[in-house]
Every structure is written in C-alpha cells, then in structure tokens.
Amino acid sequence: MQLLHQVKYLIRKELLLEWRSKYAINGVLLYVVSTIFTCYLSFISLNDKLAWNALFWIIMLFASINGVSKSFLQETKGRQLYSYILASPSAILISKTIYNVLLMLMLTTIALGFYLLVFDTFSPPDLLMYYVAVILGSISFSTVFTMVSAIASKAGNGGMLMAILSFPIIIPVLILLIKLAKNAVDGLPWENSWDDIGMVLVVNVLVVSVSLLLFPYLWRD
Image 1: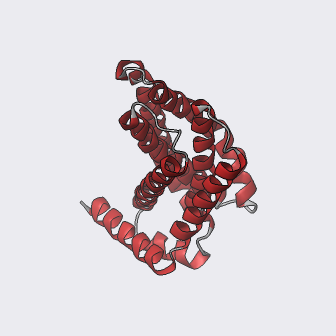
Image 2 (image 1 turned 45 degrees about the vertical axis):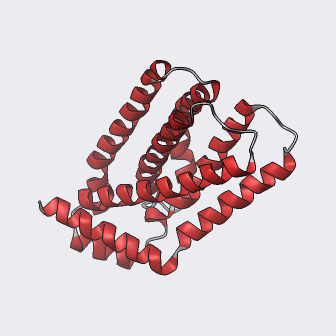
C-alpha cells in the first residue's frame, strides 16, 4: 500500500510539473508535426505503404527519445535528493515509467491521427491492429528509454551514453513493431500477429524487471 501511495503521489507530481512547463508535450508535438509535414512535402509522390509505415516508426522512435530522455537526464541534484528522501527507488522508477507511457500514448495517438490526415493514401486495412502496434510501441519505447535514462543520468555524458545503451535494446523491439504494423498494412489476420505481440510483451516485462532490480543500486550512488 505504501508503494502504491508513493507511486500515485509521484505521478501526480510529474503531471503538475509537466502542466506548468509543458516542455515535453509542446516540444515533441512540434517535432512530430513538423517532421511529418516535411516528409509529406519531400515524398509526396511516394505511394508505397510499407515505406510510409517504416517512416512513421522512425519518426516515433526519435520523438520517444526526445520525450522520454528527460525523465532523469534533466533532473537537478536537488530534485533527485528530494525524491530520494521522499520515496523508495522502486516507486520512483515505476512512477516515471507510468508517466512516460501515458505521455507517449497521447503523443503517438495524436501523431498517428495527423499522419493519417496528411498522408491520405496511407490507410491500413486493419486500423485497429495498427493502433495496437502503436500502443505496444509507446509502452516499449517508454520502458526502454526510461531505464536507459536512469542509467545514463549517473554518467557524465548522459546523452551519448543513452544513445549507446539504447541501440542494442531498441532495434530488436523496433523490428518487431514494424513487422506487427506491416501485418496490419497488409491486412493479414490477427492470428499471424499473436507471436509478435507476445514477443513485444515479453521484452517489456524483461526490461521492467531488470530495471526494478538495477535501479535501487544506481539510485544510492
């Protein structure tokens, strides 16, 4: 019960801080909208849906890095000390992860809607399956980058370390997500996607489990 109370309090704190500054929401939304519109102007004659699918996930990948990386990298020493006194390491990590998942779910939903609006030729036959892939992608990017951001925040060059650490983890996840979204673009039955969905969920469970094991030791440093 104490852990749940701490997680609830910390999520509320994150929401209040974000509402006051609106840094992540405004910055990432501007990035997504401008990138999608630039791609539309550059590749307006491209009619390959698979290329549009890969392009969407590339945009979402970099948007996730911009949105989630601030979890720990931009926190001051004073705020970290305050959080250390206030709550347990597990509560801090869980609250950061849940907040980043909610943030990315909102951003990716808006991005997908704008993407479908701009690229009217890109309309997956199974839009529900495609949105499921988007939801899984939001969760995967949030869990991976939250963990890597926590590790990188304890190093001197956090941005560079985050890029190095996240690359071998996020590439297999990105391949699974693109394959899952491709099934939706091709209009394949849901039975063809259950294995990919299961693999993505397993990766998320493993990432969260490892994060909960490692983070208390990082937090004490």
